[in-house]
Length: 273
Image (cartoon, rainbow, N blue to C red):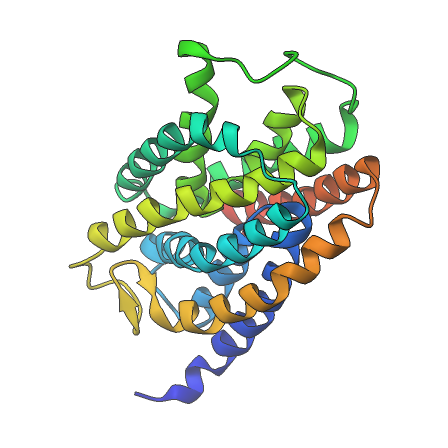
């Protein structure tokens, strides 16, 4: 096997790890919102089958989020920004949603994973940039049957997108009258509850798929995990420190602008490129 052909992939994975880790701590997004589109592009460079390329990008992203979310959540918890009571309430439903999401995602074409990724990221970006921070749908996180829908949806859609949950749970929690810094910190811990079961699901789903690239364990690319995960863990605390230097409005705007750029690129690649 000629390792030289994987050099562009290796270099992009290294850069992705550093940037993804900083954004994980800064925005509570687990880094997946960066890792997935970059890995999708990088895997295309080395001619991975387009039918499974997005599956590999999503699965590998979820695997890297496991250590990253631990590092990020610890940093936020040290600053008192993790709502453990909410984690206990939402946790089981987030895990169940993640398992269902990983199972269903393995059955769909990779292009539709890209469409879902781009569409949801675009909606969240528009909300964070243009919807007033003072807008609230509820005075607090709802309980009961209705209260189960947000964590189930967050877990399932995050598995489809290869993200740690912050991309969805941060805006959802702010609409439920939760402070943005606490929403970001709590979302970092949700990343762990999503990434572990979802990663296991993608490993099982891609176990016998011959289209997966070299160095893969199911749909999880081990090379990507080994290169990206350590760098995201090391850089996530830096992002957390930066986050607490920003105001609520600045953090929301930065989050929205970044997501808009990523969403536009993914939708363009799905429908035009």
